[in-house]
Amino acid sequence: MKRKSIKKDIVIIGAGIIGCAIARELSRFDKKVLVVEKESDVSYGTTKANSGIIHAGYAENPGTFRSSLCHKGNLLFKKNAEELDIPLKNTGSLVSILNLSEIKVLERLLKDGKANGLKDLNIIYGNENIKKIEPNINEKVCASLLAKEASITSPYEAAFALYENAKLNGIEFLFNSVVNEIVFVKPLKHFILKTPLIEIEAEVLINAAGIFAHNMANMIGDYSFEIHPAKGEYFVFDNDTTGFVNIINFSSPGKSTKGVLVTPTVDNNILAGPNFEYADFRDLSTTFDGLSEIKQKTKDLFPEIPFKKVISSFAGLRAVSSTSDFIIGSSHINNKFINVGGIQSPGLTCVFSITQIVIDILRDLKIDLKHNRNFYPKRKKIERFNPDNLLKNFKRFSSDENYNEIVCRCENVTKAEIIEAIKRGATDIDGIKLRTRAGMGRCQGGYCLLRVIKIIYEELNIPYEEITKKGNNSRIIKTRMN
Image 1 (cartoon, rainbow, N blue to C red):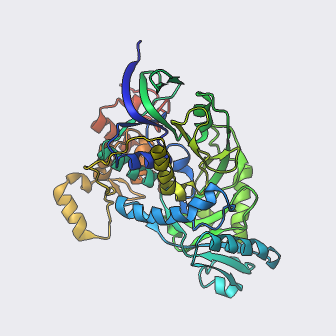
Image 2: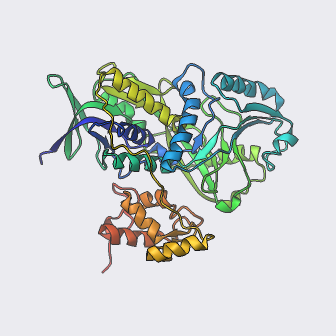
Image 3: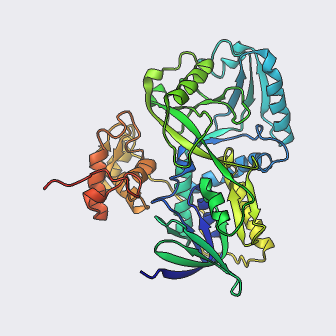
């Protein structure tokens, strides 16, 4: 079958938070932009499985992209979170040590943070002073670095916000589309990007393919970097543990990571992890050894943390580059092929400062960036049902009878919210789960899964046996009994 062919000015490969942020930034301009994604929805790679930390900007090696962009990114994230209704809580963070022999670690982080422009950064000495911030912290903790500018967010909610606003402003997205080949046509000075069903012509390609970024670069003959995926495993605690920790807590950092963290989330759970282990590109398994390591390091900070309240564990993959830094710039093979790879921590923090660099690169290439006069910067998140606000709920019930039906009891998610998630782009179980939290609570979907499947069937007319967890072949129902 002959592939369909379309033309665009700019194509972005990858719809993680980096690809979505670049897409949203490009929607400010009058350009035809397409985002190509191999998964069935945005945020299904590294974005959906990370710590959700907006770092203050003290932990990166000086002179790196990661260091130069972090604190600036922290400030830009707060501005954009307000515009896009992204959940954000300014909790602050602590890096704690159990022995004063490690004090030089904190002093180095303090020095680097001050050099990067941080103001609310200082070392707290004495367990009694640290317990004023974190009452449940280990009594052996003797000093902590307090960074008041650190915050927590929801990384996938941020990606959905960027996706929705980009679409509102004219950006197109193509899902379930694996890039098989990239060809540069020299006489016409454009790329041809080939997927199984469509060929796309574009003047500029932006490579934001996450852990597969080097594969995309290899297709044009660029072998200047490699991506080595590193797995990080996590524990998720029930939301009735709210208040056990008040702030983002890091153990002393290691060579490869900022240390295992224990943090509240914006949805009132506790998150503990991650560890660091190089892995296969599709290895999202959790392991006994990995989770045991996290459990021990977590207990070093919080000996009484209630592990009986763990409701889930998961793993994510970091895109660790062979340069140990972000890779942002035009390829030496073709300057209109822009690599944005190796975006591991603090990539979430830096997302909006990264987009500014990409726009600067496009301007250096003399790409015409005429402003989109119809650009609208704002987006509102799906309004959550609140069982404690009776007046507001009465108004909802009056306007939409679907607010009368609670689909997910653990997280109080109504049928109306799930229908709204589908209207905003969800086509499978995880798309609804990440947008509404249906299935994220104590029973992990035991009650609501079949109800969500029924709503997908009703709203999208997808046969039950074709409804998937997260696209591709992840079908939930093997066969339908008549």
